[in-house]
Length: 141
Image 1 (cartoon, rainbow, N blue to C red):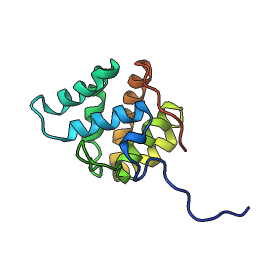
Image 2 (cartoon, helix red, strand yellow):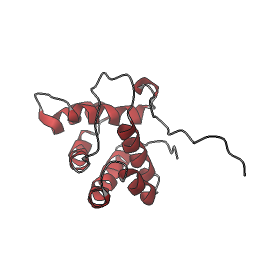
Image 3 (cartoon, rainbow, N blue to C red):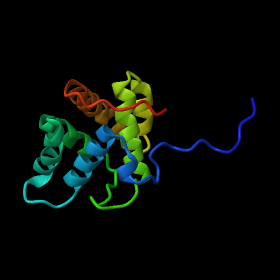
Image 4 (cartoon, helix red, strand yellow):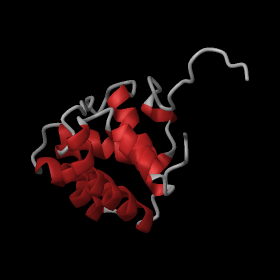
C-alpha cells in the first residue's frame, strides 16, 4: 500500500470561519471561556452557547477545560486554529460518534496520561450534552 506524505489534521491552521457551525460554536465558547470577561469563564461560555440553545453545556465545558493543562486557547479574533484547539474539537467529535478510545488518544495530546484519564468523563458529558441539544459534530478522523 503506497502512501505519500503525512496525513493532515483536520482544522489545523484553518480559519475558524471555515468550520462547520457546531465546531465554530464550541471553538468560540472555549475561546470566550479562556478570555477575560465580566461574567466569568462559565458565564462567558454560556453566552456564546446560548446562540444554539445549549447554554447548559457551559457547565460541562468548564471542568473539561480546567482539566487540560496543555490546552492553550487563542483569542476570540485569532485568524487560525492552533493544534490544541484542533485536538479538542476532534476529541469531542470522536466521542459523539462513539469512538471514546480515539477521544482519549486526542486528549493525550493536551494532557499527561493521568490528566487525560481524569478529563475523559468531562469530555463524555460535554459531548452528550451537545448532542442532546442538537449540536452534532462531523466525524473527521
